[in-house]
Image (tube, rainbow, N blue to C red; front, top):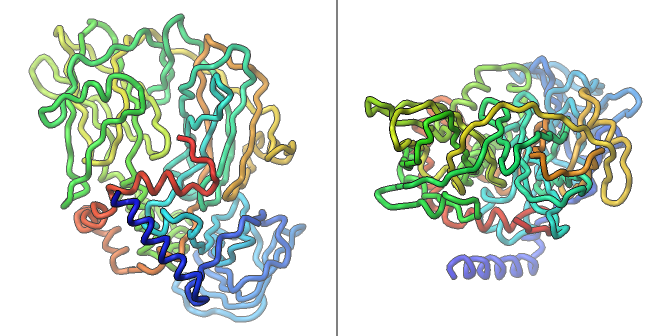
Length: 516
């Protein structure tokens, strides 16, 4: 009821705004084009960050498609931002690390560039309540189920926030299939972001009769037999066995600590010990804590965000490592087993990022000489949502088969250029908010195989006008220099919005499709 009243209040404010021209905020245009196709783009300014650290700030500019250059008039600065020259300039695409513009209608995009557009998000009342909880991440993947309904099954390269952090991601398609159904994946850009997709392939793996195939955290595929539920699962002296025994979307989760976002918590599990090789199969996703922290970091860096991204793109490992250290402090899910000497031995840590779709991984466990296998899961409070933890007998390693796209459709039209880019290791398919691609593969889904989506690329979050109101470069430096202190300082701010973040997030996708 409280959330409903909040929405009503915001709706009344929005109506009041419409009555006064000074309060009107323009909507984000969807008429977005790639840089090779943009001609004589007319915008207030463009910042061109070069690979050598120098910077052009042009107040008028245009693009030469054939020569792959950007020309305009403005100022040229060195890496210390000392003015070097003023006047006309022409810059080749291959010299650009980051292109930053405030143009809402023609944000250009190309594989060698990182695009930042200053945008607003009034398309959703939910986003007005909490701009730092708006839907955002990476490409979302849908597959039709037995009822021919497109179901959300995966998200790609969730932590690849710039080209320097580009990565390959593999996610299981955990849906029952109709035998001989054509293999097809629907790819969507459902956020205010630019997605640069290098590849989207299928991976098929043979599975034993009645068994499953899971990928380990080390990237190896294992065929396993019947999954076993835990005998016990305890959190804070209370049983959570019913919540984590079966994948049913009734997730176990807790709330973050109010004083320290690094505070840890444990789940203790017990399984019947089969006395042979076993693996822990865990289905989980992150909460929106990392989303909030990422958006908040963009907010406080504000107008300097382009500079920080360009610094990372240009190979400044010091800045990159500081950013990675910040998020690594939150950690993953540490899996430990109680050994014969009654000591907890850490096996490994699961670090799969992403708040949109849960993913399953197999963690190989050591043999323990006891009737009961005791496992501890240790994680940051409020950071993870766990749907299932089961034990499986590891049968054998299996070899995957990679399947490449055969055709690509954008809306209902065949897109040969998109197909060519997905098949070319040196090209990127650039997608913008609202884009939907259907990828067909030259196989059919078979009941005797397990399927995964393999995606590679990176994405660029658009800056929002609501975020820029909180620019604080002093706080941004503190975040990078003393991340542990920052995570304590920011805890109350996160706690204030934590209860409503899931609702805001899921109700603020760019498209009108709200399937979960």
